[in-house]
Image 1 (cartoon, rainbow, N blue to C red):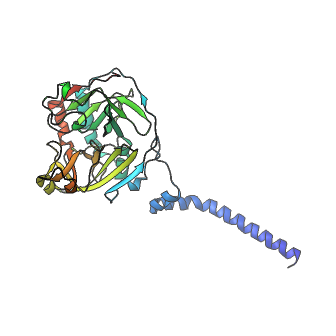
Image 2 (cartoon, one colour):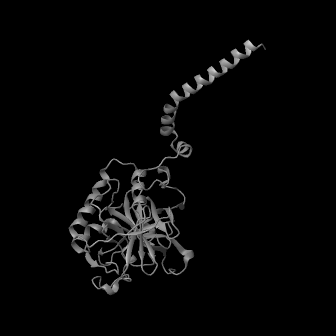
Image 3 (tube, rainbow, N blue to C red):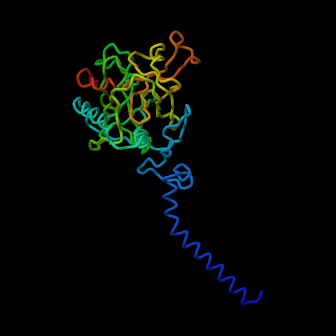
Length: 332
């Protein structure tokens, strides 16, 4: 090949590369959009994106409803910061407004994954002076949290108004996503029902995430459910199971009465008490309260069937029947 022919060949090659780059630059955005629409999971793996805010480490949306019994994700390591607040008692009427609004939020135009993402982003550690932990859900920005009543009080209590029924006097709620820690000032109970709303003022203005929603009338038939909970070793755990009316009739929870949802296959663990349970729409239907077992074999772990859950149908009774319990703290 002559020098002239070689020069022509190199110029043709360079021109082809330029044309390829230009064509790729024009087509790439369209291909990216098409990929996101029709192949979301593949594109998420190829081009991972954050979900915004301080929760960019959350799993991708498609993974919020796993079909396996248990899935775990690592949480970021954080440093807790104490916030000083002077407020102490929960506002009975405001809690009623929160419950009503969260029930109405079902009407919002959000996907199940978006709702589940909001639930996971609202998970909090409930920490005690004796080293125990439980899970709570922040349901309102200024400092209202949903959990199981037995996490902070001896169950079933003889008298909720007596501070002697409470386990210790130091309760804190830590946000695992940013490390802020607030002191629980008071609790709102329904006697002999394992559900509670805690008040731990954050110093923020009142606000409710429109993606969070409550189902106050869970169906009587079986439906799939997921529990999102926090473990002491900084793990976020997703558990899957199915509600079972038959198991609710023929089994018993290890701790206390009035856990009206039995979820088979969803085995709780230390720290999962109070964790939110959602349906396939990502709407919260209850809080985890204990282990579900065959009657008569409560002390044999091999007979554990799943979780005993308190449904949210009890929450509307808070305004009329609920008791507000002030909680003391060394930092309060």
